[in-house]
Image 1: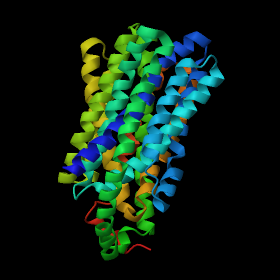
Image 2: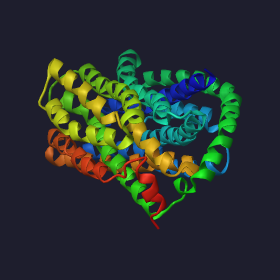
Image 3: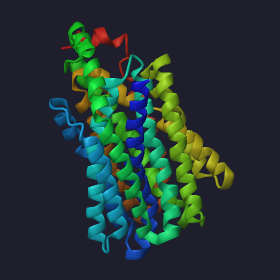
Image 4: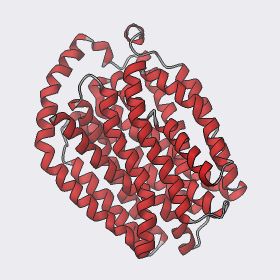
Amino acid sequence: MQQLSLLFLLSLGHLVTDMTGGAIPVLLPVIKSEFSLSYTAIGVIILVSNLISSVIQPFFGIWSDRKAILWLLPAGCLLAGVGLALVGLAPGYLLILLAVAVNGIGAAAYHPEASKQSFLISGEKKATALSIYSVGGNIGHGLGPIMAALLLDLGGRRGVGIFLIISVITAILLKSSLPAIKQLANKNTHDAEKDLGANPADGGMRKGVILALFLVVMIVILRSLVHLGMTNFIPLYVEEYLKGSKHFGALLLTVFLLSGAVGTIFGGLAADRIGRKRVMVLSFALVTPLLWLLLISNGIWAVVFAALSGFVLISTFSVTVVYAQELIPNRVGLASGLILGFAFGVGALGGLAFGAAADLWGVPAVLKAISLLPIPAFFLSLWLPQEGRSEKSLAGTH
């Protein structure tokens, strides 16, 4: 019972931290209009937001593997809220970039440590446990847009400062639970070290392990390009090309992201039953047709296909994290940082490229190109070693 309550608390911190990042895309049309920015300039904001929050995560992960830094849990959550509040207050473009960077640092600090602690306090069904942690982030990304739209109506750009109150309360809850998290993690570490001693190849960075890890990172990069591209351009696509309201754009994005949260839970449960690789293969086989149907739809059908595409795409979220953690179980922080951070960060580079492409060819053309990216991810997932059967082959590869 304690294990489950702590997992839900880490998931809550994940929710609040990612909710602040999820609010930023809905602010982009307001910022673009207020400061007369180009799509390329908007792409720079997307790049800074996702690059800072992602690329530095492996460094926090390496730090976490060397030394327990549980205080990053409340500190990261709080800093993310401070950054978003500053985005609402910043009087100029450069200060907005700085505020977005502060928000990103908070997210980068929270994720590897929280993912590591979720892994350490989980039982045998690690994909299910990681899905509980991960779903908080997916829900947060989903709630962020709709909350930002409501707060924009109530108080303009400054209204998003309300997010800071939520971050402060959550940080206090996390801080009060640090002793319990530490106690349970230490209790499980002894058993984990015994397992590593019995299966040393699982923790070694052999050639087969490195190749499998590389494939997972590439898959996550492609998935993050799709995820970030759809997340950041759906509001602009709805408002500027479908001539819909910002509320419909926020609704569509919220449905896309919240359905992904449901998909995360389903994917974790399915991975513990049928295997990590099978879940990834099925997800990437289905998502491109669903995204194309979303882009040619409007009204209620757009909502339906946003839900289905979000569900299928994000169903692999916790699956890829656990797959990487089990490849290098003695370096869980690094694995978490690579998947949740570095791979997402490299994918975030596409934000700048997508912005420049939108200036040249328009948002609809860019979204259609983005929807094709799951195809190479599908083929890469086919090449992944099958977990269970792959352990001997990985151990014997030098």
